[in-house]
Image 1: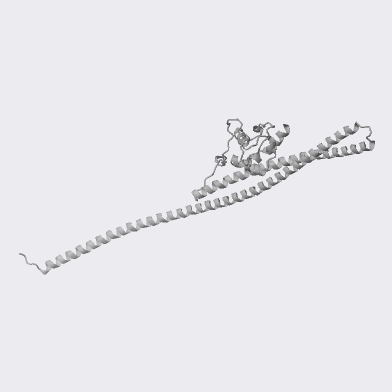
Image 2: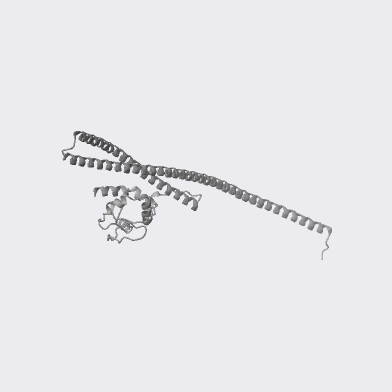
Length: 307
């Protein structure tokens, strides 16, 4: 066995030291490469996160602007609806006032005509007697002339009042249509806001329905027996029923309902008050505005006068 000398041990030690140093250098280079790659990956991830954060901020800003626009639009719609409601209320009040004025004018006109006819009849009777003096005849003539002038005055006042009533009625109908459109728009905006606060989509007003349940579809036109409850109106047996379908907006189904409520003639509709209109609207489920819009009372009065 060869002898191990100090030289051998020194060579082995130097070899081990060189191996350790070389391994340490190789490991350091590899660690540096891995560290560089890891830093580059982290930098890419941080850059991507910053870009995503910026995009989310822009998107949030856009959504906040859309929400602000929606709130402003909703506020404007509500204010417009309130204005239209007030204008419609004023128009209805003016229309009711004109209706009362027209009714008073007609009543006064009928009284004047009745007085004139009575005076003319008195004149014919008095002319048959020999004891009528010329003074009495002159007074009667003056009275007839005065009544004729009053009649002409009333006849001149009636057309302007009727024209004003027609204009106010058209304004009320327009206000009512505008109010209905505004309410539909508000309902659509509130529905969109409740379902998706950050999403705004246009709403088609024509797709909305009016929710009315009453129908004008043809039904059996056989007259129904009048009910005897507290709300029914008793008819005299010596008058014939009118064809209520001549009124625009009254179909067979509505006519049947009116007959069941005891309303059979034009004169009954022409003399309806607010209580009667409410009672009919409850039976027809929401026809109150339609009764005013289609002027059932005016139509019934004209048909009754023609009859």
